[in-house]
Image (cartoon, rainbow, N blue to C red):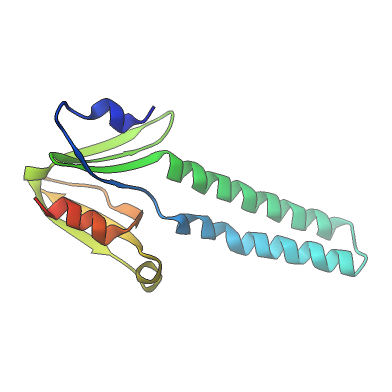
Length: 151
C-alpha cells in the first residue's frame, strides 16, 4: 500500500499526483548499444570468446540499470493536496518531506533543452524557514508547479 494513502488526513483531497519521468531509463542506453555492438561484431568476425562475454556483461549491466531506474520510479511518490505537498522515496528505507501550503513562498522549475522537449525537469520548493530538496527529473514540472501555486 502506498505511503501517501497512510498520511492523508480526513477531508484532505488530492489535487495532483506526480512521478519521476521515464527519461531515467535512458542512462542505460549507451551501455546496451555498446554491448549489442560488441556481440554483433564478435559473431560476425568469428571471435566468439572474450569479446562476446564482454558484450553480454555490458548488456546485463544495462538491464540492471533499467531495473534500478524502474524501481526508483516505482518507489517515489509526489503528491499535492489541498493542504500540503508530500514527497516520499524509498522502499525499505523511506525518506519523506512534507510542507504545508501556507508555508510555501516559491516554486522553482529548472528544465534543460531535453527537459523542455520531453516535459521533465527539476523542481525546488522554497518555504518559510525550509527548502525542499530539489525533486529531480519530475514528470510535467510546470503542471506540478501550477498545482502548488494555485490556491
